[in-house]
Length: 393
Image (cartoon, rainbow, N blue to C red; front, side, top):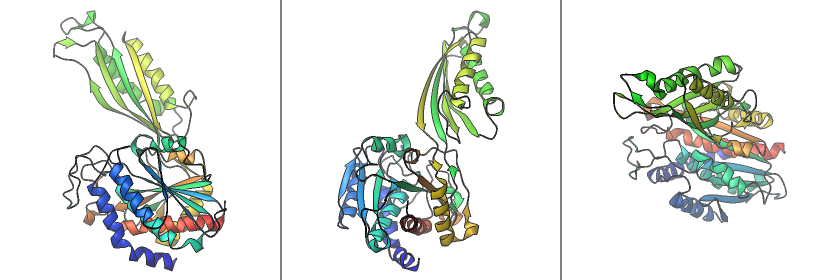
């Protein structure tokens, strides 16, 4: 759509300025007070009202020519990470926090899309609910839902996106079905009986037990779960012991289990259920016991097939069929909570570019984006919204 393309180009400088301002002032989940204020002031400058939801979340409504039409939710996440930035950028964060996952870009793209859509209300019939969501890293979407963000007016569908360094700049990743992983984080305290390393038979060694848990757990994917259902089981922490000649009483293991499909705890194919059974069995073999604490952080984002088809059509019109790929990741994303309530679509905007030094993985201290990809994200958001209303619910 040439009119939209022209407007996106005209707003490019402002778009980049917005992103850099957010980048320089990152805030952690539910602490995004400055961020929320900047968002509110920008939206209010367009003559729109804003509402606070979930403490630092910001919501705004934009109606087209027929407010009685369908309601589309468009979401951007706003929180940062407890990472000390090492990019060397002139607008880098200096407060020990960092937008190391691209949420600064998401806010800038969404605000710019809002501005362009506010000038083109004649192009859609219905209402867009813009949601700037806090605490994506720890399930802030569900908090907003619990506080009524899907009501008044009732939301009919939702779209979101993620700027994505695993994909090259100019590529858009879209597919139906699961595109991000369900994630459970775990802490296992293996309790044995401490003793002297000179006569280990008098102890119940939690270290060798923990080691066997780690090794045995790798068989879950190949022996206990359908191999067509991918999982990723990773241990990030192993702590135990105080001295080289002492067998400790306990060892602590921590990590995450991700699975790229939707299932409920207790189901036969639930990997966390299998993991718990395996841990207890291994511990019994070595005369130890386990205290297992599991926190379910996110469900899988599962794209609605009809919404995915719509988004693919828009993406192809923007970058060509050869630059639209099916993409999924084992990363977690709490946008899943919206998709569990309404038909939803989540896309990935590639941003990897060697010249821009934007090939570092997300959550890395050197992570940055190719700012030349920001306008594509804006145009994708605007045109997907317009296409949604043209198609109808």
